Image (cartoon, rainbow, N blue to C red; front, top):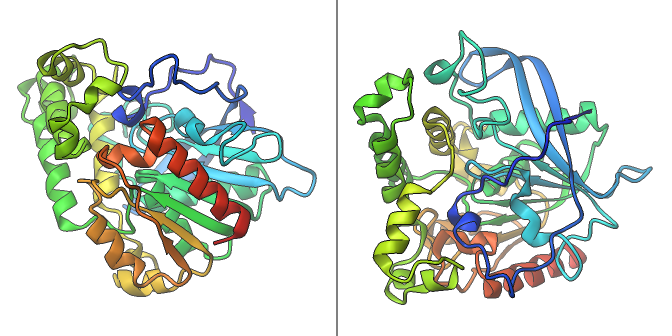
Length: 372
């Protein structure tokens, strides 16, 4: 396990948290300082058939690994996030107590810190970086846990959004590796409507002439602004916008126009366009039914899940509609389907407001304590 000596970056998390920063008087205390590490895999074979000479996984840890190595909880990251993305779950009075648990928060390929188009040398730099699947990410983290940390079993896996996608994949690829699994605002497969959305957001970037098929010399600013505008329209519920709940985000904006203009131009600060596209491709290709042995049958893959599974869709998520979650839950043995009663759309699954944070921590805390 290699500990990085560079300073921990400011959290680069989708607007689920960056835009939803609580007002100072409501903000909870920050968890104890995590440690940042890097795990490197030589000759990493991807599902696309490409072998990367080196694949790096950046991750953070909270707490201490006990002698028995049986106090570990895995927190896989979501879209363009770093490992700080689950701190709404960590600390006194929350679901995860780092004084008792060892929390491992991993970062997806393509976020700009783990191996990504932007930080990988030729011949895999920029648009030549291979498309990575959720399974590629799970395989890399499985190696991190078993080879680097010598951990062979987890107390739990908890994931939001693309982290939920990883949680589903863990449940199918390694059905006995964790005691229980939690997925918030994410599904076991990206269905066609989600692919259409993602393709629209990719097109918003790539149609900027500055993009130059991914070999740009300056950021495609107009494309990135168009991408942010499209993404923003899907992020929250329609009623969230009608009720002007953006006023509860801590924003200094006083009008919708001010809020909208700021967010479309400051959506994911300093994000690289090729990285954004790479992770959208990862999102698109997610399908547990394509795991070896299931021949594309997502229902059969879901039936193979063996451990208690807490499934928490947001009632108003436009990315992962609650109807998709209800469909999938019907095939998962031992599932607890607990929708999040929220107007905050997709972001509800990452505690983007105090009410959702309370509901998530209480529900996940009970599940972890009882096993169901």
